[in-house]
Length: 173
Image 1 (cartoon, rainbow, N blue to C red):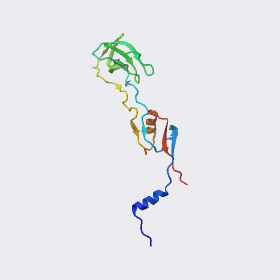
Image 2: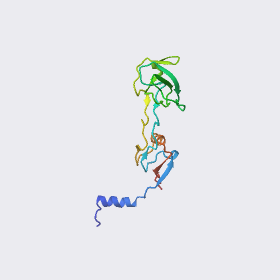
Image 3: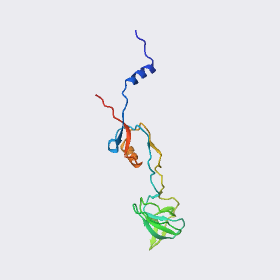
Image 4: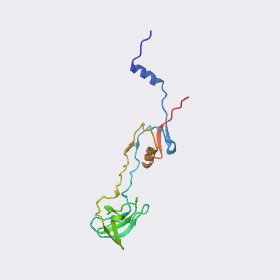
């Protein structure tokens, strides 16, 4: 009669029979349902600059009124610095120009020509998505062994990657 195997010996024998999983680098379109073979770290900072979270006016510190000196739109940032007593019309997603410390909602502003006053008191940092708010270059975002779902693939893309090393799916019969 043969002797019974211990747990460790039985596990070792089973693992020795298991095939080695192969790795492959795949593009975004082929990631769904796969498992990461390597950690994913951010290749860039998101957002890359301070961005307006709302439409309104990017204000220099102070109590107003502010003089409107320009505009910052998504894709067309204001080219200067917002000085004391000044503001810039800003749209959602636009870069907050240097010198501006908050965004006053357009609903909380009264404008007469180039003069803007606040109907609500502006607070520093208000309605600004700070540079790196989501993640910064080098941040660990997903760990090895993570299953790639639609949301996680979106994160891979947002982090600046167009492909990832994954475990090749196992073929059965």
